[in-house]
Image (cartoon, rainbow, N blue to C red; front, top):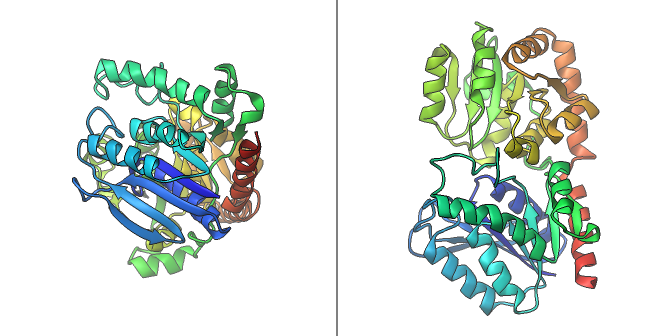
Length: 383
């Protein structure tokens, strides 16, 4: 199959990781895959590269951050021209942003089947866009409508969570054109190294207790930071770009002297940083945006063989309980208790870490997700 993947945000950020893992898995199976994303460095020109059999085209980022990702005028124009100039069997839009959806509908005019990927709940109360300063009103209203319409008008819909599957059916998407494909675990990328080996490599004291968090987006810290404050000997490692807001929060909660912000970590080093943590955490406020998503960071935690303390929100709760890969905590007080239980019980921590890695290698592996997506593509092409 000739496949075009349209990702709305920067390379390595957010939904890109989902698109990239699906793309490289399909490329391994002999499909021709082109992935369009947004460059961090280039404002005016696209840059192409070949990685793991996938052609990645990073579009210019001029205007990318205007009223939200996906609105770069040059990016949108070049993507539409690409969709007109090339013939694809499947065009897979990763969410509804203009640079992911407009060229998708253009490409359908050339005969491609259009797949809408629903990986986040954007519009309405509690959605990602429900932040007054995030959107000018007109764009916020447009996105609330367009998020739904792109799913209704697509030939097929891929949802990341059971919550979004139910929402897709409620807005009228036909049952046989909706498939639930959550994120997978990249066990080829992430290895479960021993804590001591990782800490020696990175120069981290062996006796230090460390709770870890991974992510470019670093929200809901107000849930876990008060818990860390209650555990005076515990350090908090945030793997990802240094965020001034996170530093300010740490100062406000009195844990700034125990905050370790790693800055950006390349994929080839990520396993070592994850392995430095005794326990990983996944704080989630209970709102639509979090109920609708399945954070990719959880799959990294599982692949690293680390137990997780997570908020019981959305599909996360079921995964943690089903595979006995960690503990659930509804608030900061419960977070502190759950973290302390795992930090003080090495046998339980190791057992849950083994469970996590086993789940990543079997039921939750990306190869299973590729099987499901490939079969869905074939079904849509046959309709």
